Image (cartoon, protein in one colour):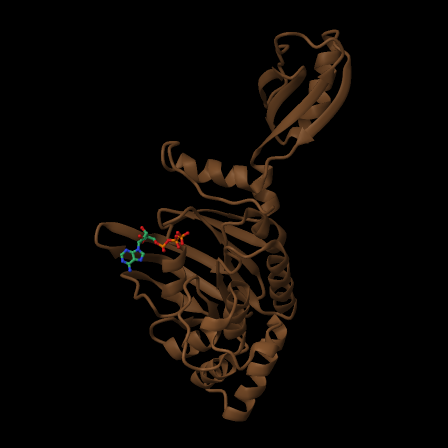
Amino acid sequence: MTAPAIRTRELTKRYGDVQALAGLSLTVESGEFFGLLGPNGAGKTTFINTLVGLVDADGGEATVFGHDVEDDYREARDAIGLAPQEYNVDRFFPIHEVLEHKAGYHGVPEAEAEERAEDALKTVGIWDKRDTRFDWLSGGMKRRFMLARALVSNPDLLILDEPTAGVDVQLRHDLWEIINRMNDGGTTILLTTHYIEEAERLCDRVAIVDDGRKVEVATPDELMERGTDTVEIGLESPPATAPTLSVEGARDARMEDETLLVSAAGGSSLAPAIMRELEAAGHTVTSLDVRRASLEEVFVDMTRADHGGDTEVEMEVDA
Ligand SMILES: Nc1ncnc2c1ncn2[C@@H]1O[C@H](COP(=O)(O)OP(=O)(O)OP(=O)(O)O)[C@@H](O)[C@H]1O
C-alpha cells in the first residue's frame, strides 16, 4: 500500500505565549484533494511550514510519503511543491530563470530544468512573460507564477496556501481548473482557503482546524449533513404565530414574512412528517422548500463552539 501523502501525529509548536500547533494529527492519503480550513491564526501555515522544513516542530512527528520531514528532509522536501501565501521570489532574474533555479535545487539537470520551466509557464498561461521579472508581473500573473514555481519540480504533493486570495473570479476558475487537472493526473493536493466555495467544489475531504488542533475531518457533504437546514413552508391563511410541532428533530418554528420556517438537522427527511402534522392540524400547505446548511455555516458553528460563541470568523463566499 502507498504511504499516505501526509501523516502527522501530535504535532506541537509554540511561539512564546502562542500555542500555534497543539497536537495536530492528520492523515492525507496519496491522490486526495484535501482542504485545510480554519479561522485566522488557527495554525494552518505553521502546519504547512513544518512539512516543508521551514518550522521545526517542538514535538510530534510528520512524514511525507513515508519520509520523516526532519530525518529524511531531502526526500520529503523533494516530493513537495509549495505555493506559499507570502511572495518569497527571487526578484533579480527573469521568471523562467527563477523556475530553472528552482528545478535545479530539486536535482533536475539543466536541460530538463529549461523544459520544466517552459511547461510550467505554459500550464499557468504566462509563457509570454518568461523574460519578465517577478516584480513586473500583474497581481494575477504573480499568483499564476507562484503555482508555476510549485509545479516545476513535478511534485507528488502540491501544497497551496490560499492560492486564490484576492484574485478575480475568472482567474480563480482558471487556477481551479489547473489544480484539478494536476489532481486528476495523480498529484495529491493540500489546499488552505478562506473561500468556502473553493473547498466545497474542489476537496474530497476537509479538515477543520482551530487553536492548533483538528476539530473535524470529513467530506464537504458529510459536514453539510451535520448542519441545520431550514424547512420553509407556505401556508394558506398563514397564522400570526407559528403552529406547535411535535416532529422529533424539528425545532425553532417561527413565522417570517408569512412563511413558516422550521430548523431541522437533515431537513429534507423531516419535511414530509412536518407537512403531515400541519395538515392534521387543519393547515393547508401551499409550498415547501428546504434550504440546506452551507459548509460555511457548519464551519462557523464548529469553530465558534470552541470559543464560547464570540469568535469572529472570516470566511468569504465567492461572488
Ligand atoms: N514566526 C512566528 N512568531 C510568532 N508567532 C507566530 C509565528 N508564526 C505564527 N505565529 C502565530 O501562530 C499562530 C498560528 O499562525 P498561522 O500563521 O499558522 O495561522 P493560519 O491558520 O495560517 O492563519 P491565517 O488564516 O491568518 O493565515 C498565530 O497566532 C500566529 O500569530
